[in-house]
Image 1 (cartoon, one colour):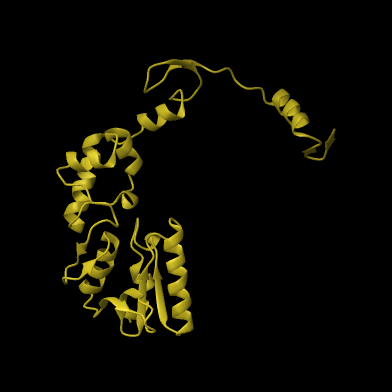
Image 2 (cartoon, rainbow, N blue to C red):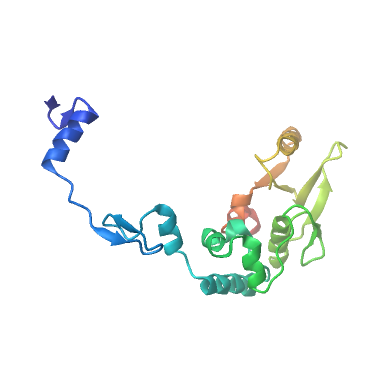
Length: 217
């Protein structure tokens, strides 16, 4: 049954459309990646073959990693490298590619201390990126400054009357989220100017200029 341009069911629509627009027979061809014969008008026999067949070659990926290091003075993190999936496909693991590019892989993001350009000890590479951003703009800032109230809590950065937290593990660990909520509640109770930074404010592209417009006036 047809009403205007609508059909009473998907079955009716399929019957009519298949009659009006019959499918053209496929062509037997070889997959451009694995060489297997298959019937289709496409170039690859499957999605995995397409992904592998269209990947960037190894040398190009290594050049991209080295170019990033030359520009930023450090190797990239996985989350900020646009061709990460291609790297996994070509080298098996991210660290294999980093080693082949001639570098030492980053330690676990929150495992070791990182020293910023002004000598501040940071708890993660991400915090060092933020600290160096302040330093490059000659913004006076303090690290691990205690919150008022004597609760043993410290903010990541303090800039004048602004309190800056990097919530790098937000949504990943229950205890971390509990601590995050506690800090946010405390800042609200004390009427503090709290600036919240998350990983997507840093990677794959920095949005710090948008977060700290009050510093750039």
